[in-house]
Image (cartoon, rainbow, N blue to C red):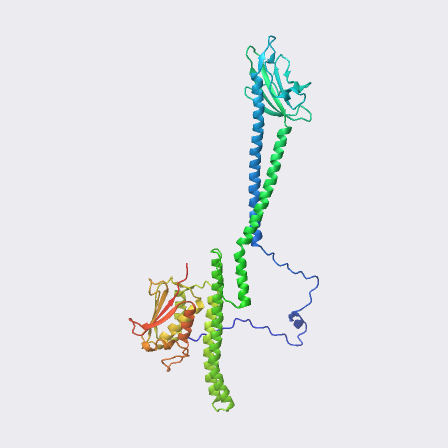
Length: 492
């Protein structure tokens, strides 16, 4: 079916005539290379995002969080263990002090045996004890010398009570105190044992220093491991890059190197893209070769006729240019279909397309009865413009060569995975021996009616581009030709 095409290029405004004065000046188009005043700002290229840097940043963040959290927890645990061990030693001395205490004949407390640690006998040795009772003078260790321990407030500690004290200048203390009533006495005696925190603080500082250096080394090792992991993990991508470079430099057309499972889908898509590009290039070469071959004969005829001054030159020009026009239209239709298929995700509703084609054909063949039936919701994976062209060629041929009735059935085979469209007529049909040849370019069985012989060839080529097929059979209902058009259903 011949379709008129309208140009989509907007008309060019005519230049104003000379002598139009100010109107010409106003309507004049400024020069394309007019000078621009002031500095020209060039936009900076977008920052390149590195996958390796992103992986390293994530690894550094998590390593830092885990090391800080683990270091804090380990620091608190070890410090608590050291302090607990220190407090247990003080409590052990306090228990020994209580068991060694007794009441003398004057009601004062005394020790019937001395403690084993000689530091309690050395002045200002850093370990002290003191026994205090209300109404009695404090009974201190010799190590206190001329000092005494100040007990916190007036309270009763039936269990050991630990706390820190700074009552001695330059010597922070760790003190444990407990209130006990000794036999033969009604006085509540407070037994206090103190030790300088210097050794305890040194142990804590040493532990924290070891933790800091150990976790710093651990963090450095983990970051080095993350860098090596990123470098090794991304090596398949570098191999893919090298393979692509080899394709460009060495002429290979596929990536055949074995790669990890995670990269195989990417390689498969690249190979599929290369195959698609090769197919398109091959189709373009084939179309160019076919078109050149098809135009060679008419051009040769015209050249020979012009050289020989053939008196029928005008008739030959008209006939051969019509032939060349048919070939050009055929190859342009294929090229348009290939281009639209490459745009991806083509969808077209079959029923509206068939209705629009029938409305157009009805105006040409007013005496032909057209019937449209089938699935109104059928959707196929093809561009609407190509579907209109396919249905237009098939329905127009049915009306042209039929006997006055054309049936169009959409989705005639509902159980099929593809959408099958039947176009039937009540004409003479096509003999089985001719059903293959009729798809050739320029092939016609009835030369008595106008036509180019390209309609079915265009239908076959465009349908094949979208992965469909077209078959010819005999209509059981009308007795004429049955065209089975099979197109892939649209996903979703």
